[in-house]
Length: 318
Image (tube, rainbow, N blue to C red; front, side, top):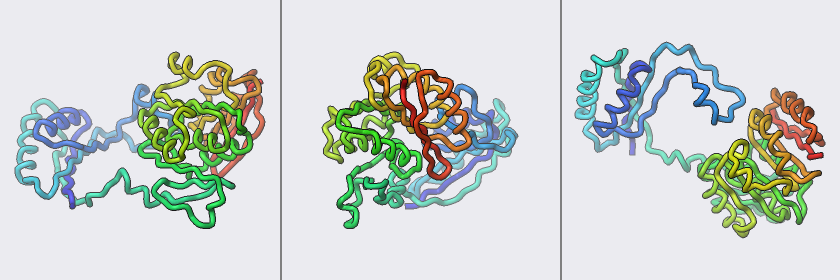
């Protein structure tokens, strides 16, 4: 089935009014494009190393909406024009031009799966749940993952860097703290490597469901991997649930700005001698992270590894 896409060019000041008007006439699922810079409040919860460089904000916005083949397009467009006429005394609507195009009806949530194939990280085979095990890799340690809408297929260099560190350092008595657990891939890899248990935290509520499904796919008892939604950096409840001085390894595959904050908090959760495995660090941020860890009297950097443009730093709590 094809969808008709309509894009209205207007002004940024009129976006809220027009969005409300669209909702009133039964148009849902709109897209808004503009060059308005993000506010400090908007970026606070976004773990981004480098914000995209946008063209100057000239007050222009584009609002797109979709109508299916069965919709009365002429009637909808008539109602849009009437709605714009009603709004025009209250806001500058700008160009008010509407362009039309056509788009395929695709399953965007699942379409990416065609690109996620089994791959190896040393002697570990990471396989999406919907793929079969390649014959040549049947002797490898198997980790099955369906990230759903949570982060973490294992394909990214940073995840692989963390897995290699876990492979070197996990044993049967290891207790793991997984910060930013996402799909649970690092915690599940740790359990597959012999870890005793994992406690995971994530800001995204989807992580809880993703971890539960991936534990089942890997035939791992759910009692061995507890995951909670929240921010271990500033949520006292999460900090208390995680516990103090009780983990042999804390692993965080997050971006550098978060690690800069986390390296101060993480020590209270690690046993003395416990390891802090980090990645998500772009090479341009390596020195900044190293300097922060070096300035932390409770941490000693043990190893730095690289893959592509990404860096993993492993430190020990003194």
